[in-house]
Image (cartoon, rainbow, N blue to C red):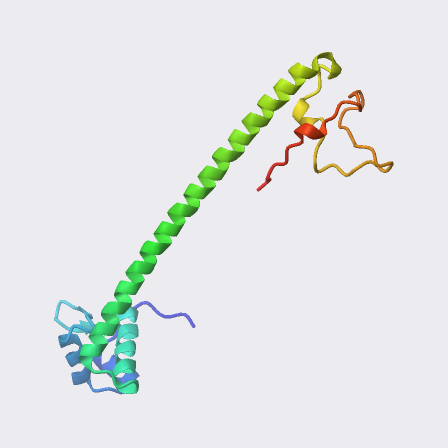
Length: 173
């Protein structure tokens, strides 16, 4: 059900909850609810005010909590909400820091893999074709060939060169 945006008078709110208008005035005097006022000083209850009043009435009439207890409960709820918001902010900041660190680690691993590939290419000398990119010679995700031999991206790569020593797996996410 969609709630309408608007304001209610004290008489309408009193009828909603089957309470006397004086009870609502007493809750306002105790600071448990704070409806807005019109220019003519008429109380204007918003949806939030009505929800808060509903909670106060539930605590007092249904659970038998006195007004001091209601005040404490409402203050604690407010404090809990503030703490939840702070914790959510901390979690969001930590999550973004973790994502940033993951990205730095990926970049560092890529750079290190390229350095290793360059060293390997330098050490292998003429055994690798000049057009080959060493980090792409053997992909860990490639399925093995049907005859059990390792599958190479380039057909002109010498199969006797042990490529297993430098296989690097990357976390794709």
